[in-house]
Length: 342
Image (cartoon, rainbow, N blue to C red; front, side, top):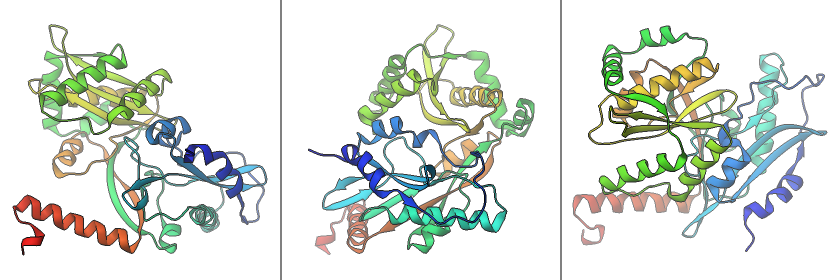
């Protein structure tokens, strides 16, 4: 059976576009292009099981823009959402280093060309890298643009400055945890994965990421694009752990797990150690998003700067209707009533 992975090279070759650019000499490669670890082909291969493709825009033999997307089936619908543990994607557009209006025009032209290459999806949804500050091209192509948030800590701040801007309660729990726990790298991915699964089992829960998480953890450790930090009790037992990944721009807080009886500040302590590592590596530390008030309050205590992540979404009529009906059914089920009994 042919998958998108089989078609990817063909798609790229057949969908390359020559886009009219603002008249200017081609400058050397510049950094602002929002390419993250989540855009890496090896990451997408694992996270999607090979079911992804890449829209590309070329200027001569120079790559000016790319937009990865995955494709899955959900019942009768073809959808393109983020794969497991992939927190952002979006277009990567090569900067020309022009003045504001001309650079903006270039970015919109390339992004529009990328959007036009996307196949039909009943539902498409991607949160964009925080470095992407506008989604105008998506809006002009009929996408809905919304906002999610993350906290970031700039590598231009010193470790002392970050410590001073933390909430006093966060500093206190870190100090307390540091008296009782020792932080050290976890020896192997297998140790981290066993610990993670054991904590889920103790709470009668299943791993929502399945085998993809195991494969990604092994891959980023092997490739040295991430590592695993553990908090150990005085008797040498692992009681809390986090997983971190990074690229040339940022270090991302990706995974965490702790024993129920572990010190309440164990995860805060581990994140604090990770922040120090990010600053030493000259990387932005990104808490990698949050989705509820409790997590927001916890992460806010670390003293980071609130950053927007724009989200782009386009859904067909039938998919939207089916989603509304499903949400209504689930709401009725939780309340103990059946929609059919009304």
